[in-house]
Image 1 (spheres, helix red, strand yellow):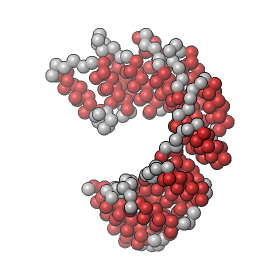
Image 2 (cartoon, rainbow, N blue to C red):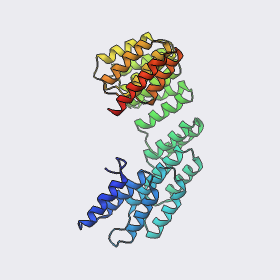
Image 3 (tube, helix red, strand yellow):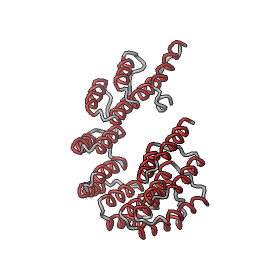
Image 4 (cartoon, rainbow, N blue to C red):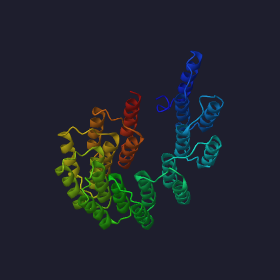
Length: 341
């Protein structure tokens, strides 16, 4: 928990306190310390902890320890350290597993290191006991789809189908996002229809993705159709949904519809966040409605949403465009007070 709270130093102090009190650390305790260091970018300390484990007869690092270490290397894009980890594992006689390969494949894919991603997949197939699963499939689709390499994405989808790997709802969400990002709206709609035929129920993520894509494309009618469908099927819109709607209406110059959104939210129990309020502030800022911006700002504070740098930048740009210098200075004090409170 200390590692997740970005306090690796405190994690080490607690570890040392254990030693002082005569409590013998186990492999799991050491591995947690490796994770605390590694996830926070202290990879040298993480590797040193693994070396320390090797020197203790009943605390040798195991497959879980090295899985954590690889995950940390991938998270911080230290792909140059992967071979070192694999060499240590081979020396200790520890084999690789599916989770480890999936971590690598996902990391290489997100870094657009496609050759290494495919090489890792080949190694996975050649390793006894390692079998691709739906996580492998989704990592490949996300990597190529995000890079708008649609033909590659479709090729790999077919490859995994031949391996009898069944897609899940996340698979279809990735395909929808990828086709939408590439402007291939017909294929995006085809995926939705395919899901219905195969009895896959769209989730809030599915609808949020479609609404965001159609909104950015300026297809307001279609966007509103999916928004209505979403509510008809009993899915409650969340802050992400409303943020996409507000941004779309703002880009289309339909600011009156933003009022409709605000009224809907007022009658619901939806939990709003800072990005939503930033979207609304930006919309009214572009319209030059400074009084409404201030009203929204106080509503934001009333909902316990802390303004951030984007909030201040929106106000600065809007006030600057109308030469309201004093208000900008006042706002800086207000936001500064909010951040400190």
